[in-house]
Image (cartoon, rainbow, N blue to C red; front, side, top):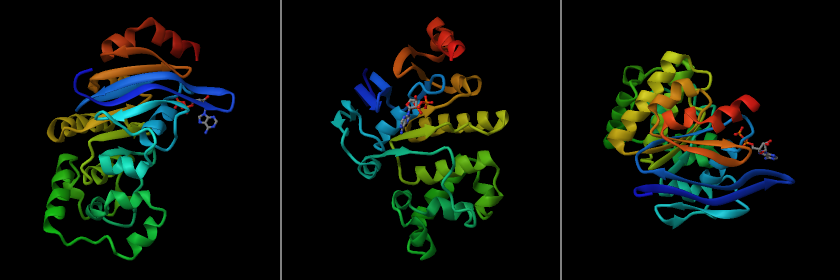
Length: 253
Ligand code: ADP
């Protein structure tokens, strides 16, 4: 595919006798929102983990901008601009919204992140960094809350804040694991709209695992549907969501 930023090529992954990924291939277009859907147990999280570097595939390869990253660590991938988020935002609840955005994301890959934060070693007096942090908060519509403790935010706002923290590291590809889980429909739509703005304004590519298809699909550019470790359908949201194979997979699960 022209403009492919991420290419998963014939990846398989077993856990003991269980085949979690069975020869999966997919291409993620640059500056797109690509959705990964499928019933529980279909292999979505395993695939995100393989792309993020938490898991190594048994066979197959992952390419980022034509570079083979299959055996790179998550930290090495992070340096290339590939960042993974988790269902629970990784925030410091007692610190302010602005402070959370200013803590460099690279520290979150280290085991002693708490020590680093408590020691204030991360503190930046760099005006440019603060400027950029405020711009990102403004893009996420969190700028008016810059001085509030992170603990005072709603669940959806915390997800946006984590996204803000990640955007400070200027990522190229962001892997999101169920960003809409536990968020009310209005805020879920807000999150999807913000992702589109980030895609357009910063050129970021998103690969998103999400169950709430009613809320997510109309904001996506492209969808891959998985079932039992394989890709069973791919295309624009309207095509994939109407694919009888996809409907069958959901009903049968
Ligand atoms: P999904 O995210 O689509 O719900 P997963 O990727 O979590 O699916 O799981 C795919 C399959 O792999 C499931 O059958 C799951 O039980 C199995 N699986 C996932 N991770 C592990 C693991 N660490 N050890 C053993 N089995 C696993």
